[in-house]
Image (cartoon, rainbow, N blue to C red; front, side, top):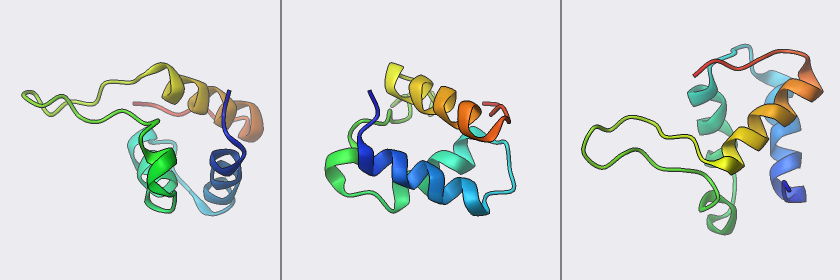
Length: 74
């Protein structure tokens, strides 16, 4: 379940974002959230530095697609 504060940020970012890149969208969402909600998002792998999606992020991507009708690529 997505917390209300995160849902608000998803809608806010959606209103001005002109990209379908997940990392860009994630940065915009996370940048304006309090620490409490930032911890829900995954961090990069410590050695390879690659992104690793967690279940919460998959839920956020799904919600983005439901609201905007646009998919996000990784």
